Length: 542
Image (cartoon, rainbow, N blue to C red):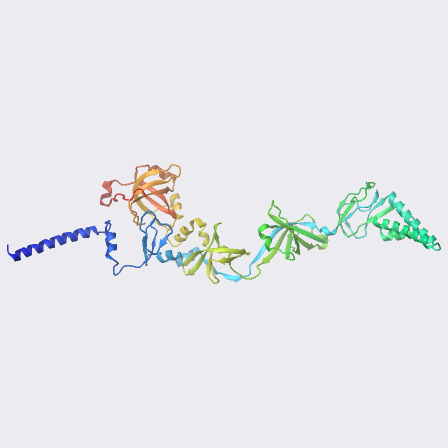
């Protein structure tokens, strides 16, 4: 063969081999081929490759990375590119809401500002007599009640009004002794100084005894001038007020120190209010309060706190506080119930937001801050003092920042905060009817994301309802085939989850890393699936 012919044959052979190699390489790098991704990565970035913002967890967990890495199961983190819907917001944890939806939901914001917090402390109380204005009438000698001049409990009396008359042999003897001593002093005017001095001391001793028995000066003067001892002695009221207690009965015998009457001056009364433990730091002596009683709904009584009791009532977790009130016309009766209001304010201005802006989960508090129109950032805050409509924010919000004060009730608990926030800007899924399974899906984020997969049931726990399923690739999550655990949204779904059964199912993420099956049916037979059958599961045992 000539040299030219051999060269032509060699060139033809090289061309055929090159064409075959190109076909094999093209088929190998076709979309979906296992080596396509590795070759694309080895080829280096293309000229028009989009910028990678960060890498997200392949299982949907709230974990991101600025550099490529693998999760504990060996799966690669998935890149999130610039320009993808919600990518920037997800990177900065922002909530994205369209202007139309903001208007539809009635979202309102208000700026955090410095202000003095005013809070109304409310407490229930009861009217009681002023203990300093109660008087007891108790004779200091033994005797008998001769006559009652005030004989009804609750009767009004004036100062000096006669209450009752008593007879006492001991009192009569003391009066006669004093009368004789006075007469002796007068008869010994011309006697020696020693004799006159002794009689004077006897008269003074008798006078002291009568005064110690609460005999009035007027009665003593009458006794000294007339020299006649009175059989009955009259006791009078020491103050104007109300007879709150009467033990005296006409003809009864009484002993020294026995209380026969009690009179209370009700021109001033006390209100004993029970202040809750958490409010006691706002209550100070001297603070002005307003008091209302049911008997006079149109009247308000002004008073002042005079004493905060040092002991806590364990049964009610309250501390008694004493309020002193003027009682003109004795409108306030002991035993009445009262409502006490105290306006307490912070010492200075503090950074505060409306109470409605705070979402309180019990373990932490969150507010939604509007960073720009249609963009809201959830922030954890530390709260301080509470006012009537405002609450102090010690950390998490700066002065002038706009916080959401209306429509944040859509986030009902911290446990599904991320899911609810992610669902703000998502459209509702179409082509399906609401069900109990959808309710489980809406508590996961995003609310409209429903994933589909096919696989085989390995095991199912009858107690917890957790099924272990070996499934094929999940395109919506960029998952490779693997074996993992799923929860069941509804008991009725368990009938199709038998160990060894081939199934086609839908699932959602109800919480971080918590995957829930919402729909299940037998998988189509291989003849029905055709060329689109899922590849074997190389990651079983995950």
